[in-house]
Amino acid sequence: MSIAKAQIQALRNGIIQSIGDNGFNIVNSQDLPLLEKTLALYGQAFNTAIGANLQKTGSISSGKLAEPAMPIITKFGNSYVLSVGYEQGSEQDKYFRFVNKGVKGVGGEGARPKQNTGEYSYKTKYPNKKMATNLLLWLRKSANTSRNEKVTITKTQRKRKKLSNVVSQADSLKSLAYAMSAAIKRDGLKATFFFDKAINEVFNKDFIADVALAIGGDVQIQIKQTINESKNGNNNNK
Image (cartoon, rainbow, N blue to C red; front, top):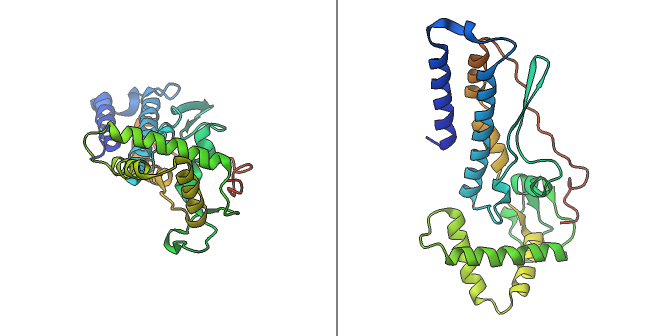
């Protein structure tokens, strides 16, 4: 059982114990502490699922993708809105969709077709300075982190260990970062669906059942994904 599912089950048991033999009459329609608690815990479970999925795919570099915003619960009249994910305009908001959905590479000599999938796409084969610099910083950090990890367990740790070996053998770290940037532009970024999977894992039939239980009746739920694509939609400048 995952951490998220364990938390959800604990909440469900807590709600049932709170209701007891008195039925749903203890829930005040104007004040729904159980509903707010339910939404808050599901928001936390979603954040946990994001981190777990990133670990599974070895997609964590700086770790910022594993730090989504704190869940926010807003009440509009008789409706509640649970906002989760990354804060609009944040650094994570600018690139998480590319890790999630993948980016098609430009192809060319030596390209790996099986990896050349994704909802977004690179438009040029030439890495820009920002991309190469970010990769350089990532290589340094991954190598340093790997040296301090005594046991290799997770996919992320194995990836860091491999990178550490590559870095130690490289004549020029800057040249290595540029070469890796060019390879990424050529082959693309494989989709991880870490965000989509978290949505499906957490906001499922159990979520609907728990929310209905918290308010003591039927519930209408709408799940909407708000993504600002105006600046980053096609990843042209990446």
